[in-house]
Length: 113
Image (cartoon, rainbow, N blue to C red; front, side, top):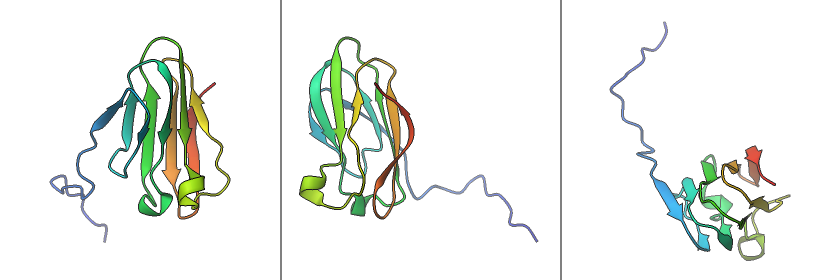
């Protein structure tokens, strides 16, 4: 017997809100949808992977102008992510979608320079 779909079920994850970023920031596990809104040169640091296992993060560039926004796992501090290569967003429309496993951040979708 197949389980029935419950359209009234409430997600335990809750609502995903877009965090707007205009300067260097360290994300938390709640910051899973991130919009870069200004131009400039700065770094967005991912949260410790151990806090984010199984979560997906979307980071996208909507700000116009010249940008060099680096997405870093900050392994030097957390020491918990394997084989990470910093992602760099340089133009409007560029984005990355990241999955946190128990050992590393995986780029699921990437459109970067």
